[in-house]
Length: 255
Image 1: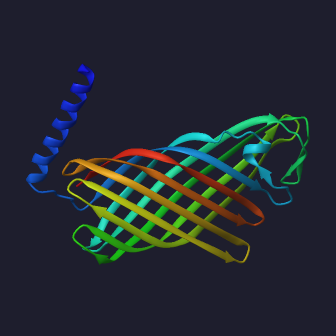
Image 2 (image 1 turned 180 degrees about the vertical axis):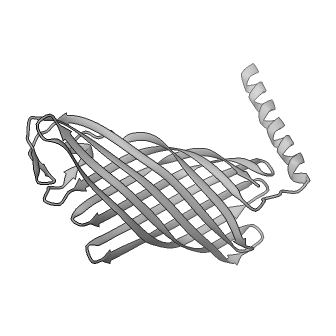
Image 3 (image 1 turned 120 degrees about the vertical axis):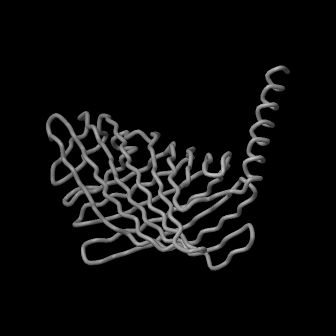
């Protein structure tokens, strides 16, 4: 009972403090930086030129749970538009005795041999958000941007050495963005995707993000949400199909 009373008092103090700050007027600033701790779940497949498709989770036992940090920079362009830049890196690894032969870069990894695998990626995102429909507490708009995926998968064993396959592909993205804002709480959702095929390069992406933000200071707050991000790219017969999803927590500051 005593602990419950302390928690209630702390919550009341936080909201009281927030109300007083907001009574002075919220200053959203011109530039925002957020850092997210993303607790990801990974599913991936990879293929090299002259090779067979490798299911990284099933064939190599690449771990499907890991965490990463995602940076995001936001800058208003006009009253109804903003530019977002984000970056995150991924690295998953695992090993197991193969239950079948796998060919990677024309090299055969034999059944019964202990083989390790790794999946890595650097993801760059740039989004221009335009909100033609705006009310006092809600916005509906469009997303135009590009997602740049630099992904690599590798297999290693004692007899076959290390073999790698990599792709480096920029993908356009279009989508919708919706947000609603109350006194110091903001809820938003975004959906974007695209498919592209040019010469020996092709790819598709799909991203869904829903999040909440609580601003305990006029220029700072905490954020939390869920993100689904799938990238499927092929370049010069090397391919990577990565799905990353999970909840995230973080903070945001504005200047």
